[in-house]
Image (cartoon, rainbow over all chains, first blue to last red; front, side, top):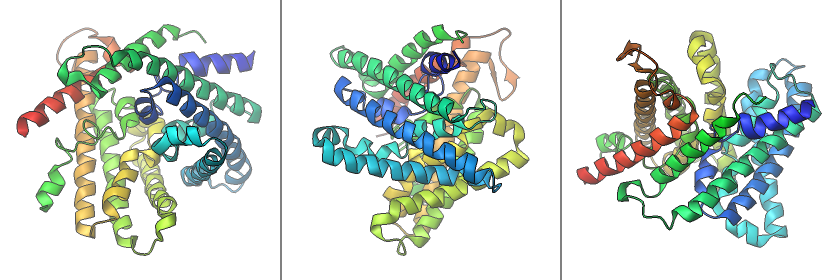
Length: 192
Length: 195
């Protein structure tokens, strides 16, 4: 039951993109095609889950016992950066087509605040997660990211064919669409 | 390029938020009021200024292959300093900015300027660029925060314009996206006029 609440809360109510504003760069950057946004979601989910497991262990078994929690930011970003490097090497070998499609945005997962944000949130005291809950929390957030970016990419594919006023073409129109999507997700508020 | 031009490009011509679309997460996340936007902008300016300074000084010492991790460590150190100082001296602002203070470390703007500018230019240009870009970012966040505060709550920096609630949606999440969308469109028009 608790896990169910975590999942619903992270996917719908406190959606990572539309309610917490994390991971906006890939959200706007790789959402012009549904296929690339699915690839990006997969990469994010993989990195996010692994990063949360590693940083959770580092935080609770190294930083807290030695009383050096102020090193949280530095140690976390190094873990995320090396994980992304690893995913990049694996993808290059296993799926060159996907590697080509994700292009510049794979290294940019390093500066994807969604990853770092979730790893920091997962050890917050007011949640008090243990390891398994933290993993479920990470997967649920990645699912929330996937849901919104794929929905958004679907809308943008149609938006391309629309006659948008000149000044609003590109980023402005996309942001207004994202705003309307956020409005729709506000309907889930108070569910959990 | 003169230093004045180098400094002023961050405001309209190459504004990090409106034109380059960098650092959008904090731009959308903390701008529920003009004050929060300004606070976040100045914190980022400090980090950007310091990291540009250090990166431009040590650029010849870092081997090319490991430059990105090295930049990240430099940036993360200054973010940690900002985090601790703000927690100690500005607790109210620190609480309302929350998660977005440690997340300055993954702000594409800071990394982008280190990689694209500070690495290739002398210390003076790098510092001026950091300051200009940072203040341009602060400017964008303050404008967006001000817009959302006026439309959503009917006040700006504590002065109220009208009684009642205003359009609450602008203080909530959707207003951030919609407000920023229209500001980008406006900035595009202004930029075209200047040129």
